[in-house]
Length: 514
Image (cartoon, rainbow, N blue to C red; front, top):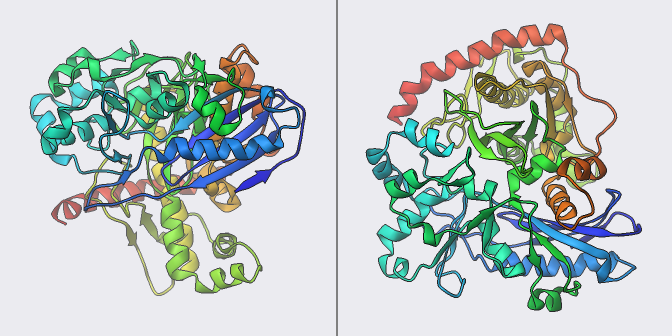
């Protein structure tokens, strides 16, 4: 599927958003205009509870199809495309043999089968020490624990393992023939020291993973190679097209939002809501609510919470409790989300005492707690659906404030929020977040920014721009009006935010018994 945004002159770069449900390939002109895009969907599998797998070969196949699609929008011919790069899903594990081919399906970010392996590592190293060494929580979502599961549960296969790759490294090898990983993707393995940007020998020793199984670590902007002859033939690209190493999808989304200066925050509102802030130096959060990763920009780091379910809650609410709005949308009478949230816009801050805990799949704020569950609290006969809709939006804003407070606790001066993703389209949600956090909120002209961030890396690697900052200035633009906090509503939200936190911690013992 291709969407053309207007033919312009080159040169061009291609950015690829390699996600878990599909890959978006976007062609940008050097002046920042989106020329064409192509989305290629693919499937996931869930072989048993807690497991989430994907055929890793689907990723390069989708990139081939997408590149071939967008090249039709280049009137000058393929040689006008200077570079290509990737923003790839984080926290995945591809176990490969000596030929670089996968020995089994990839275990992706949502796979949580390795709880036992994470617990065994926690018996050998204190989670606080683990966090201090690699900047990440000792949590089974990170890729190293998925590798340990393979070692424990599939020993015959493990004996043939030659390479452990995150998705970004696997894609890079398929397209450029180079075995390397950028700092951000490497950090998602939970094996990288974010201060030195090298593998942590202390943690490697604890988990008993030999360094020879890991790719070489380098910068996301590094022009690692040109494309392979096979990829050139399959796509129609010129063989001289430069390949930048690429980065993790959250880092690409943040970069594509123009967030690379210290104190700028990117709020990625999709099914989940990762929250990322740029920092000029590595930082540690005493509460460990946010993790520290290298950014896609080689000169910056990222404080990041990987995301509580947010847009997924709103979709659940729409699907189950808004049949009339969905029917109206099907008749072409408006967007169901807009119709649903419109009735909540005139209600007061705090939804007349109704509070929603956005923990439908566990909590990532105000702490990491897989046992937590979603809660509506304070319902009375005076409340209606509009109150519950607004409370749901407010609950996600409270969780966002939790994360911002943790970033401040790590010493970061948080100044502004840039919202991206589908949730950024909702004016009411933007205003609630501005009021709850007390910060201005802006949105880029394109809210799907992962492919934009990858294109920025390609533009730097191919020499079209000298720095990430220069490329971002050319490729990223914003809607003219920011959403500003209202002081009176912000003061009211200070009280309701405090009640939200009291409610969560009061229910924490109950969650633990579920």
